[in-house]
Structures are given as structure tokens and as C-alpha cells.
Image (cartoon, rainbow, N blue to C red; front, side, top):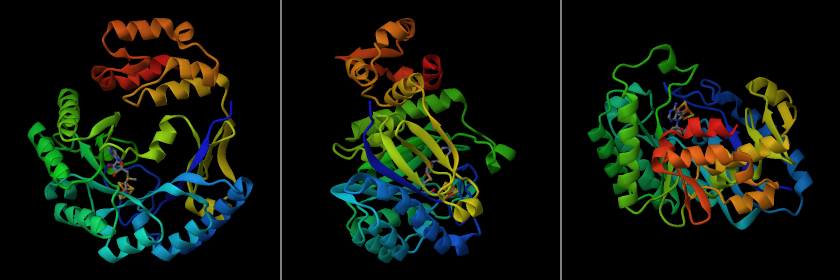
Length: 368
Ligand SMILES: C[S@@+](CC[C@H](N)C(=O)[O-])C[C@H]1O[C@@H](n2cnc3c(N)ncnc32)[C@H](O)[C@@H]1O
Ligand code: SF4
């Protein structure tokens, strides 16, 4: 069955400096390539969008890297070639160390209506250790500028499990975040990724697994007590402010991905664009990988993406969409995790329990 296609992701791979935990595709010292990169992006987007004439997209997400390093006129150009529905969610990621009030005002004016700021934490020593560009005060100011510029849909990213962080520090971070009065918070556990400074030089005093789990559970508790719905493993939103773009991923809908290293999912095919900046700019239309998913892969993805949602999956809906009865195929796995208290039914929906969320990667692996 054809999957809905309502979303576009565009990757902006430029950063001023590299954070010590980050292995996203992003390049430093290449700001001079930005205009040429946008020429390549315009070729990429116009080629694929000409096949979707008349279609209005419901979400556009400009992620990075640091999209806020790019001058607004380039976005104005880019957005003019994309047909968005009137109430589309149009998000841009921004690093608080790179935004001025004027810049955010212009972004708002040219059509962005949601901003996602990488705040991470409010401790200046830790921000320095992470090699972030900004201080805690600058992050707080960035949220304020965003509000004053007319953004009423503001998200911030936080990281827990940071070097030297205690449970009390994380609680303090959460209360400071709540005080900012934003509508959406993403809270990620620090992951030591390959090809990062932290991977090569493991920082001291990393919280152990138990403390990480405590921080996660405490985060859920504090955010829920303060009006945030825990709607996905790492995501919390005030009512009505879940990220429509990310929900499209978790609902296993299709999406177009533009830019270096961007992924897309169209006509049952997953693709990845070229990952080397210069090769992408030379030929933005050539893919690095492109593969039609098998029916089993589509189902497996739908299960593990759907189980990331706290609301879980509806086996009847899954049967309609994928013509597979989950109880027939995965009976022993579902029963095993139900008996362990890691999975449960709420009404007709199958969900991970909060203890299940802590072990989600192992559970997902069992479905593959
Ligand atoms: C592309 S970045 C966000 C925007 C912008 N580049 C910035 O850093 O301000 C997406 C988010 O992923 C999170 N992140 C990236 N690498 C991570 C890691 N290794 N562990 C935990 N969170 C990570 C950070 O919270 C980061 O803000
Ligand atoms: S976390 Fe954001 S700012 Fe830092 S290197 Fe990664 S993409 Fe760039």
C-alpha cells in the first residue's frame, strides 16, 4: 500500500566548530561553500519536486549541522520553490551561539514557524567541555529572541548523562528548561559516537547505566508534572505541539530528503544522498545508496518506529496497512515482553511500558 508523502527534510552541513559528542554530517571551515551548496540544493529540490506538481507538503524541516549559519535570503530562495500547505509546520534548527534577534525575525517573516534550539544544558563549564559555541545565558537569550520574533512553536534540545552530571544537576537543567516556557523539549541521553572527540578521548566521570536510567525516568516525571506529554522516547510536548515532521518518520510515512547525507523514503525505496560535500555539490542528483524495501522490512520498520511512540501501535491498523497479523507473526515476542512487564496493551494499542523504553533497543532488535 502506498505510504503518505507529506514531508521534506533538508540538510545543512555547516558548523562553526564541532561539538565533542557529535557525529552528524557537518563540516567546519567550509562557510565559503554555502552559496554553491544552495545552488546544488536548488537543483536537487527542483528536480524531485517537479514530479510532485500540485502537491502541498505539510512539513518542512531544515536540520543540520547548523542551519542558522546560513543567510536568510538563501532560505527565502529555497522556500520559494517548495509548495507548502497553508498550515504547514516549517522548522529550522538553530544553534544559540549563531542567532541574533534580527536574524530570527527574518526567518519568521520568510515562513519558518517552528524553531529547534540546541541548548543541551545550562552549565557553562559543561557547555565548554562539550565544545558548544554558546553560554547558558546566550541559550536563554536565544529562546527569548525567538519568542520576540513571533515564534510560538519553540523546541529545545537537552542532553543528560553528561560528564560529571549528577541527578540533581539534571533536575536543575529540567527546571531551568521548564522556566523558559517552550512548547517542546527533546531530551537525549549522551551517546559516545564513533568519530567524535569524546570517542577518541573518553571524558572522565561519565554517569553509569543506572544513573542514566534514573535521569531518564526523572526527566519523564518532571516534564509530565509540568504539562509536557511524553509522546516519543526522547520527546515531550505541550498539548498540540508534538513535532508533526518527526511524527511522520515514526508513523513510517514517506518523505523527501535533500542535501548532503540526507536520507529519503519514496515509493517504498529508502535512499541516502552522497555524503562527501564536494561530490554532492558536483552531482546532487546521484544517490549514494538507493534500495527498495522488502515487505518484511517495511513491517519491521513500522513496528520499531511505532513502538518509539508512547502511544505505540495498533495491531488492527497495522494489519490493514501491511496485511500482517502481528499476533500471528510475533506472538512469542509480544508475550515474552508482556510477561516481563516491558510491553502492554492500552485499549487496542500495543506499547512499551516505561521500563520497556529503557530496554527499547533490545526489544526492537527482537522484532528484526
Ligand atoms: C543537529 S543537532 C541540533 C542543532 C544544532 N546543530 C545545535 O547543535 O545546536 C541535533 C541534536 O542532537 C543531539 N545530539 C547530537 N549528538 C548527540 C549525542 N552523541 N548524544 C546525545 N545527543 C546528541 C543534540 O541535543 C543536538 O542538539
Ligand atoms: S551538535 Fe550541532 S552544532 Fe554541534 S557539531 Fe553537531 S550539528 Fe554542529
